[in-house]
Amino acid sequence: MPSPRTWLIAARPVSFTAAAVPALVGTLLAAPESFTWWTALLAILGSVLFLAGTNFVNDYYDHRKGTDGPGSLAPPGAIRQGLLTPRQVLAGGIACFAAGAAIGIVLCWAVSWQLLWVGAASLLAGFFYTGWPLHLAYRALGELVVFVFMGPVIVTGAAFVQTETWSREAFIASLPLGFLVAAILHANNLRDLEQDRAAGKRTLATILGRRWAERELWLLIAAAFAALAGAVAAGALPWPSLVAFAALPGVRPMVRTVRAVNAGANPRRLNFVLRDAALLHLRFGLLLALGLAVNWALG
Image (cartoon, rainbow, N blue to C red):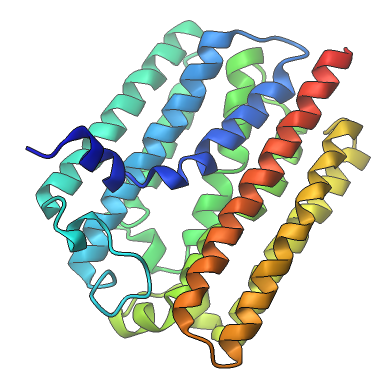
């Protein structure tokens, strides 16, 4: 029987901030109007469980389709490491989705049954991201799916949990985080471009080719900071949110690494681009949350 630590490693906990941070931002965005601590925690936990379920299902189907083979530049997943069998990985995904759905039902009961549709759509998107029969990530829809469900859906959903109102301001405020989480996935697909192409996996990176895929990565990051400025200018975010611009220097090491790989460095160094994209999202999101908390404290 696998240990709890093995299950945690297989769930890829380093990715959890990609779900927890937007839920935190949505909560803090709504906090000046209304705040209930336990529903906020459940919204964050439910978002993380759905992401963990997606990670498990993604590992299962990537293994089946051969995109996580020995030639991959990515660190080996739980199946490739021999930590879990494919059946166990799939069962782990279903268990995480079930736990997330149970939390969703509690929130529906405590807040509003309107959340049922959000939760159901999120669960389906998480499973069918790589799951049969849609395999959305294999149809060049990965960036769009994560942009929508880990940007606007999580942020506006977490805000709704507090206020029971679907907010235009929350939607606008979610766009920077949506662009940055799409950048994380795109950095992943940029690293895996050759392996995905050989396995028949269609991503935006395999369609665009390396040079244009690199340009798309920089475009997604630029769009995030432009969206932040636009959200503040439109009044969707308070002025302390501009502190998130302090995350901008985190782009510099990504540029250096991509240039080094293009100049002949080991392509495995693209793992650092993925790491730095995730750190950029985390720093940006936490700084944005800090700005929102300051605004809440100022009244």
